[in-house]
Length: 91
Image 1 (cartoon, rainbow, N blue to C red):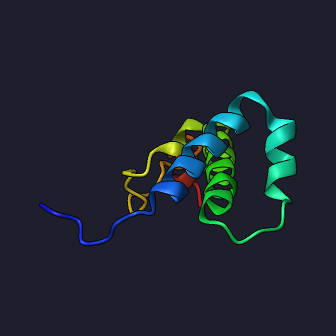
Image 2 (cartoon, rainbow, N blue to C red; image 1 turned 180 degrees about the vertical axis):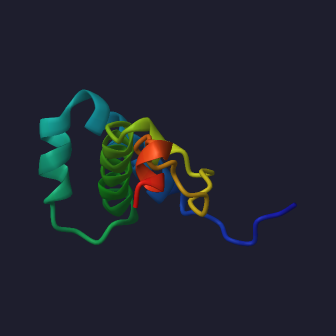
């Protein structure tokens, strides 16, 4: 299966660099994210940093929220207090 969209090699290189810089040098990544410019490599660096940060936030979520395949239509069990059958008969 061929992908008709090609990614600019400079953007891809910048994306990977931005991701690694965010991992190992977060202060530098922060500075680069505020840099002004239109180059595809700088855009890639900024997007790579953003992706790393999103992944870090996802990893902090509780495990029940991390499962993307969870069935959200099934109701969670609710607690029903034990009833005294004799109490219901006295009414």
